[in-house]
Length: 392
Image 1: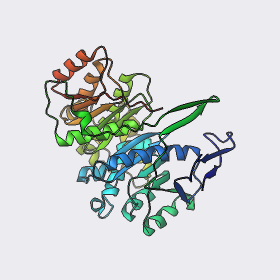
Image 2 (image 1 turned 90 degrees about the horizontal axis):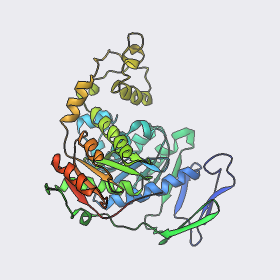
Image 3 (image 1 turned 90 degrees about the vertical axis):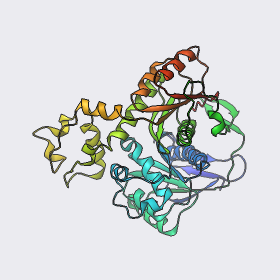
Image 4 (image 1 turned 120 degrees about the vertical axis):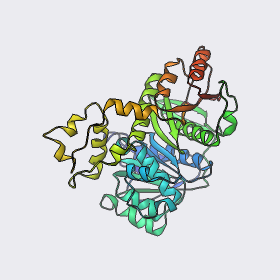
């Protein structure tokens, strides 16, 4: 197949639409549904991400929305609190499937943003992973293959219309990358930069103790950023992205946005959140909104005298701002990557509020000395990679 006709482009009025190759055949098979223009943009970006994460030694998964990852993760087992906060504590044998662990983590990173996601898996989709996907609101998936049991489960989604794409595991794209904007053709070499531990050798801070786990998490953040709309910053822990700030015009806004998402990822594991007893009538997808509201300054929207029964079987105690701060202040060991240099030390100040201990960024700002000094103030380890990772 050299060409695949699409229903429409980014919007219904943009017709005709298609994907095609100038040479050879398309590297995909559509096994179910009718994927569209945006689906394939997400599919090919997310597939590249998980393929690169797979080189770190574990199966990987990504949850994509609008050409940026809401979450990306390696197949690290989940502890009891994370199983519950990712809503997968009822999936038998989940920790026996590294791929299922990877998707549970990727989906659980930012569940609000992952609503209606497009999924990428680095390995053949197994039945356990498909069981998780089947009950989540998702628009489609790309993977190098599917077991018969997994394919049967996925084909039953969306009244049989779930988009399922198989990608050729051996496909290598051309070195030249071309796109058009406003009738003008752009051409560049593909971003084939290899992201490995050699990028982390130039440690510029007083603290140079970069653990193996920190190296893994920094590489997870950098690989995630390679396929995230710029400007972008990514917080990572336990082999997964825990907060992605994408497409912001200001670096500090990226850092704040990603930090807020990372904070929510941690706060969902707090005993107060783990102990929430939801009303039986509350839909699964509504729990995410309720939890986020409970953890916000608008908590009265779900805890008020006249409304709490809509959401909870047992009225929760408020989670105070002081409790949130104390919990977040106890965190450490978080990794942070940036796709370009930090122009000001305010990014480091914000990162310190979310338990960041390790940073990787290209360097090259005229204020690098101030950024390094701020890292030293918090005893952080910072590596300057010398590699910018803009993605547009």
